[in-house]
Image (tube, rainbow, N blue to C red; front, top):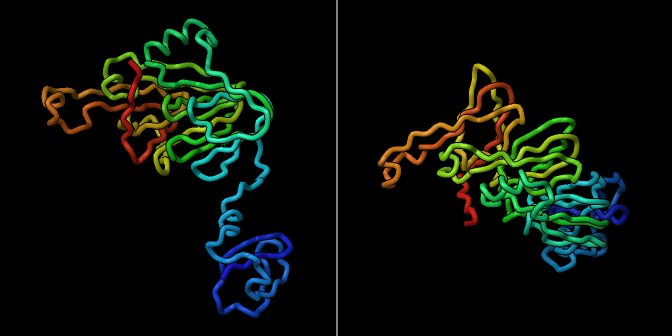
Length: 270
């Protein structure tokens, strides 16, 4: 049966053996007698139980909050950059504008043209509550304090307007073959959100312990690192008989690299 505290509305399922007994609410410590419908007012699998269980929760965590591990809530009072197409809902007065052609200068325009515009951005400006998601991928919030990080352009969900950013195009043709041709470097102070397929794993990089990754499984890395592209392309690779690991990223130095348990294939615009 479902137990709901009459004082704080805390809800949980409890075994039937507690029926008729008084238990202490885990949240507010009030004593509540378990007497079925009179106590809970909610029956299992009912519409009211579903609405209560899935309702938006006010956590008071600030600008960026995880409403769930796959849904980002932004308590907007100003401007943020978001991945184009990631908005799923909003309340309040918020305006959305696609990134202008010359919004960040000619240099970034050229880089975006070369990179196939993989990091398409939309400016969300106003006051309200904004909800973002990206194909059900898991979301991680990062708060930079005069730090920098590289993020795969496809895995960047949102960031504050005060954060400085720049597109870094991989210079070698190997980057194109890997599909992860470009990355975004973000720096300064502020919040950003990145995505990954399933739980991300962070690997430490040290001078005596370089880390090698598959570009299609690489999500982000420390702003102090510059990966080296390693190739082992042969005729077998193009004939489909290669190992599938012919292109790799090697990280050397001091920092970290974030990977995901998934090899994502990126589709670039023509």
